[in-house]
Image (cartoon, rainbow, N blue to C red; front, side, top):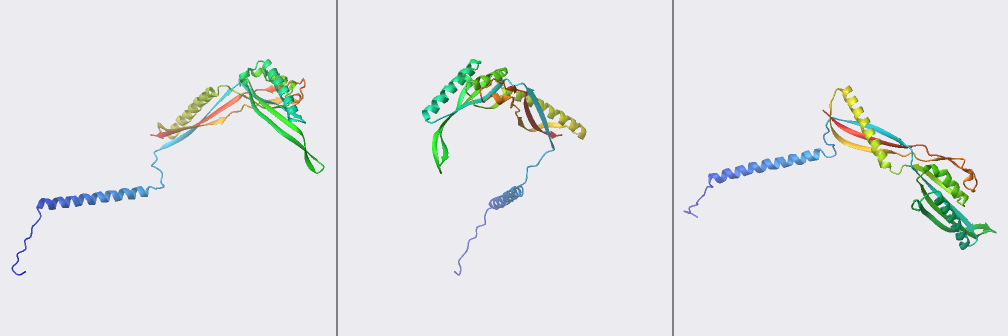
Length: 257
């Protein structure tokens, strides 16, 4: 309107300065965030930055005479009826167990691992006919005196055991041998690392990582002259216990200074 007066109010200088500073700060913060996100995206799929390192593998082997043996002993019986097959099998297995105990094996070292009853069929005149039943029972025997293995096997077969197998020798406390093998493996790796560092004219730093693996056991027995075992004959099987081998491999990663 003609003659109207418009009043203009200027903001204080302090407010303008504060607004400018805030704008600059927000712009800088936004730029930093963008840069961080771009840097993170740039490293996707890339491995972390590696320091100078060297990986050395060492091996330790320990040999030990076994102090226990384990064997599976069983009896398989056949008869026309289930009751007859079970009775025959039970009588023979009880005799086998008593014979094994008489050699000094404790009851805690005997464990029944299998007991099965199944029908037996035969193909006659174009069809399958039931002719009887088979009963089978297996017993795991832990032998703490390895010198008695042959004696125990002979005693079991003479009393009717017609299934003998899975004979193996081992150490009752294998962890002790593993510790010794590990110590040898670490010592072997250290010697290799020091020798290689000298050849490369570098110095070894701290251990970055350590891993180990076991090479397994070599504890299976060889049975010779065992043809008399299944028939209850007088032949004494020749059992060779040999030695157990415990192998441990370690890998040590050192930092290079």
